[in-house]
Amino acid sequence: MNTIYKKTDADNIDRKVIEEAGRIIRSGGLVAFPTETVYGLGGDALSPSSSEKIYKAKGRPSDNPLIVHIAEFDSIYRIASDIPPAAEELAKKYWPGPLTIILKKTLIVPDETTGGLQTVAVRFPSHPVARELIKASGGYIAAPSANISGKPSPTTGQHVLVDMDGRIDMIIDSGPCEIGLESTIIDLSTDVPMMLRPGYVNEKMLEEVIGSVEKDPAVFGDVNEDIKPKAPGMKYRHYAPKGTLAIVSGDTQNVVSYIRKKTDIKTEGKKTAVLACTENVGMYPGADLVIDIGDTDNEEKIASGLYDSLRRCDAENIDEIYSEEFDTPKLGQAIMNRLIKAAGHNIIKV
Ligand code: TXA
Ligand code: MG
Image (cartoon, rainbow, N blue to C red; front, side):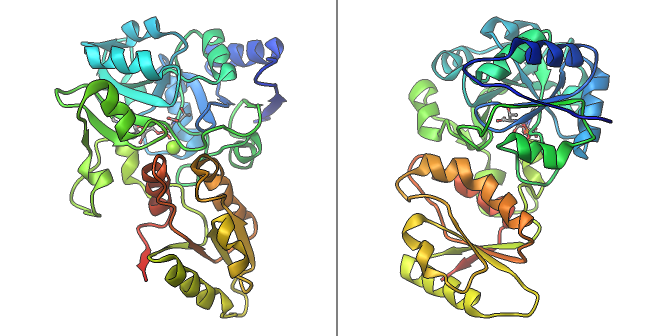
């Protein structure tokens, strides 16, 4: 398949690009597009065969449900039922934006889209290109992140091209995503609201609007292979770079000296990389690649560059990656959730 690659500015949208992409989705094809979180791989959410195509293009297990993206609040009534007041309150405050809400589904949503579940994940993104595309495509786009299953989510059009060239009909490139981590997921399909995936809308921001929320213990607790996460996708080893990744945790001085020792050892044919905050980038002269992940007090920058850093390690064929810990106040929970998954829970305490 020949993949069409088109660029458009987010503030000066090229209507022709949107119309072409909308036509593709309406006729059952797939288009990757930018959102404020990560790039999505979109198909018609109400078409079983489009959803099947998405799973195939990503190499994703079909028991892992897709998020349905809408471009106006009222679209929710066709796809979800028993919508509780909490959903309306959260939507009022954080939509359009990086929050996904799980609700009971209506019959119009095919099982192929929800991985056989009786619930549907709904998201109203704020990115202008995403919103225009959803409208041009009939109002409902199913879209997982536009990466090959298991790889870090794409945050630029070029990341998508690396993974999806020849597998989908079209890619729309509008530059880097602002947030860089996938949306927060909250389940409101049961009596007790439960956070299933941390993201830019953090626990405190949710609780400010709807009071106390529970957190899925399989995602937020210690590793325990016996409990299954409620968001099926959270069980897979995700976001993973090709090399091994270890997170080094402890006092800054101990962390720096441990990583320095490891990267000073030169092994024939082995390349090492370090993900370091700006303050520490000069501390690892022995590493083959040191990535400046940003200032510790600029958590937005750390979040938005994280997946690109992991992909850079792949592009440079790094065998061993060491990362400092980025436990920042607002986004730390989301950043560390992704990093720990990428590391397959390999945390070295020093
Ligand atoms: O920011 C985002 O949410 C991005 C952009 C493209 O919008 N999308 C995204 O989709 O991250 P994906 O497919 O990579 O992750 C969706 C997650 C998966 O872990 C999936 O299991 C979970 O949402 N999910 C979807 N529907 C669900 C449902 N009905 N119940 C529980 N979890 C669900
Ligand atoms: Mg994903």
